[in-house]
Image (cartoon, rainbow over all chains, first blue to last red; front, side, top):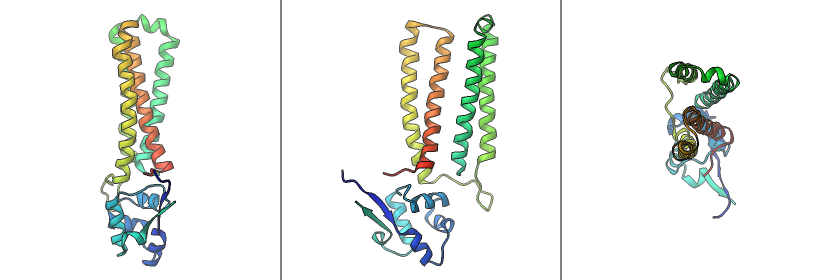
Length: 70
Length: 143
């Protein structure tokens, strides 16, 4: 199994979306504010569906929101 | 801190306090406890377990989280994954305890030793369950 971790651009994208709050994003995605905070901090890897929902909330493709760092 | 983590803290603390008090009392006053009638001993145990039930109910009422419209906040995928992992490991601990209680102790001891070991097995699995919930929220959960 290759070692690595999921990275994300959620903080930047929230800023670019007019300083969207974690709670607002959580509401759009259907998770709690704390879960968005955990994803943003790299403490939780979201399911594929949740990742797609987050990307959709920013109107971006998945690869622009999430990445894989070796 | 999330309500589920707060509840896990309260629950694990209550378990530790109630079981420590109960087992300390039972072992320090072993002779007095042994001379009690069956009903009194069951009453003593019921008091300990009842107090745990009351703590759990009060903790749930205090720690449950509501949104700005006053609705209870439902669990999301992270909560469910943390809960599933905690339940899985707690189940293994409980199974080990049940095997000890059901397959070993009846041939080596009996009576209240079996009851108390059963309680300890349940307490151990609850400790693992709550501990892993706290760990999941504190340290994160990565695939």
